[in-house]
Length: 260
Length: 266
Image (cartoon, rainbow over all chains, first blue to last red; front, side, top):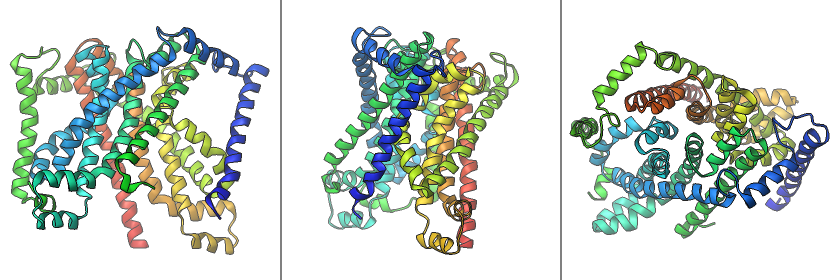
């Protein structure tokens, strides 16, 4: 049985499920009013809300501006955390002494979830973008370090021994053995942390922000505007999925030897 | 540093010295920055000041409750949201692993919903269930639910086919197949999922309480932030870290016990 043969009936059931669900949604809201519009919007209202935010704007900006604002902050914090976290993790993986020295600080910080940094970031930096970037930095930093570290530890010992026997100089060792060897784990870590970053940013923006998707959700819940809440949630989901897919593409490019 | 350092262990003495030095360095740097006056005390208290505040919070109430009472109400929300996620998620995952049609129906829905960050449920949680226990519960549930389903499903999918065939040959019903073959065989996978799920649930709880709650540890953080009291915020963060760590440690013990028992039995 080829995969396509196995998948075809399943895909149809999936499409059918969404159709039935859409029909149920329409029937419960627009047709019978079983669910009141104050609780959950009808399809038409949701469409209108989407048009409103996309064309005239909502919560001080249009949809693509909110999305760009959020994505920009996530990428900034994510990049900063990767730049600091990956080298730190690699160094911890390569040197037991360095690991022993850094690990205690790490053990103290690690159990604190990224979301719990939000109030501290707001006290320190206010409601602006700097606080958001700091929060995202915290969300991405710990996974970046841990996975780079485990990536180095997962390199097969005989590769390391071979490099040592051949007397490979240090820079070459880092570039040719350490980084490529740890790269699969590093990317796994980055993918996990990108999702954590996205969640964290939405939370940060819900608590206090002047723009961004979390701000849209916040404004919509203040206005008791369920249709806009649905649009905001969908935008969060689609943007998050798109960023994860993009990172997957980068991953395949960075590791052509693993390409399937 | 060379390749040798990676494969060589460190002598215990040296490891201990370095670890203690690292531990001391962490607090020393913090203390130095706080004491130097570079940053205002209000924004960065010294470690003893934070500990003092932490102890004070356990004795005198802040925004209505003491630290323990806040933690207790947080933990109640966490336990109910997490419990609900386990009670619905694990059976659903097992059923999906057994009935193909259910898998085909639920998986696309599940994949679509998974990308909605748990925190994005906050507006609906508040709108539908209020800020007492219902709203936060929905958010914890949406954080803790996916790992329960995924791990139960994976566990059920990777049961050795000969067990299933044997049970089928002996005429096991669907119910017995799930409860007596799939469930026991997927326990290790389920327990691993519970750990992930509890971690995500606890995080989501903190997020939920920052936004929709009128008590709890997250609420304490927000109020500390509103009062611009860094020492209260830090005390809350420490409490969150300790409880999160304790939950994980508890589940890790459970995981190890179960795996050890299986190791002996199997």
